[in-house]
Amino acid sequence: MLSSNFFLLLLVLSFAQNLHSLTSPSDIKALQAFKSSINPNTIPSYSCLASWNFSFDPCSLPHRTHFICGLTCNSDSTRITSLVLDPVGYSAPLTPLLSTLTELIHIDFSDNSFYGSIPSSFSSLTKLETLTLRFNSISGSIPPSLTKLNSLKTLDISHNTLTGSLPNTLSSLTNLRILDLSFNQLTSVLPKLPSSLFELSLRSNSLTGSLSLYSFKDLNNLAVVELSDNMLKGVLKGWFLLLPSLQQVDLANNTFTRVEIWKPKGSYSNLVSVDLGFNQIDGYLPVDLAVFPSLSSLTLRYNKFQGPIPWQYGNKVSLRRIFLDGNYLNGKVPDGFFSKNGEISGSFGNNCLQSCPVSSELCLPSQKPSSICQQIYGKKSNSIDSRT
Image (tube, rainbow, N blue to C red; front, top):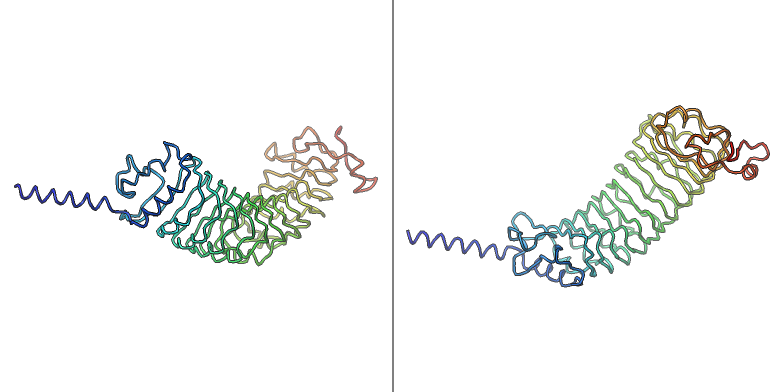
């Protein structure tokens, strides 16, 4: 009986010893260096990093008092696979030592105060699927070596201070689904984009040039394009809105001067929302936008459109939101808009329209003064003033 109890005790001690040294020593070293790089004044007592006590093994369970959050280990508790920090304002440069955590699948440091450039050594994280650094103070350019991360599915470095060009090798990210680099200071034309993209968001940068077919070729899964508040220019070609999976497009606040609309083949399209507001587009409103069967939101406000509002817009059943204000449209508003009993919102204000009843919210704000409309159409302008 004594010998069996002694044997059981040895098993327990052996098991406890194994628990104490589960995590790879190189991973522990990298975690220690990472925590040491954080300004200690930015580690609140209630935070994840405050619980990282290296007297304990990071992957040992249960995590009741130590390593309670911030990291995840693989199934055999030997390697770190995820670093997801709480948004408490941790401040530190991004350390290259993280690159030794070669089993990482997810990194999420969003809503903190990390700064400095992205280490080029991150390219060694070949299993990384998610890199989220939004709302920090990351600066410098995007290292071309980052495009070697072939497993990457989500790259979100929005709301930082990145500068320079987008890597010409961006299309090498053959599994990338979501790319969000919005609210930075990027200053290039769009390179060839990854064919796997589902969502492209580059709002509020200083991107230049026109949208080329070369950049968007073979993007058969692209559903969301957000490129507002840039310096894009030229003609929006007809192929663009016919991208096969496209649902939402926001190109507002650029300097496009013309838009081509091609009818979708067989009247098939997933397009739901188009925003081309605050550009410099002139000519007549494109009638063929009404052919897109699912279109529910259309914004063409504050451009230089002239002529009447197509009656096809007023008869479009799917349309629920339309903003055409701030142009030089004339004629009468199609009756179809006023027969929908408040089912449609938007504005036709600040145009040169005739008999647009101010009792309708669609006609607010009031139309342009006649003097402005006469400069565009001559003395026979159909504009009205705000008293109509």
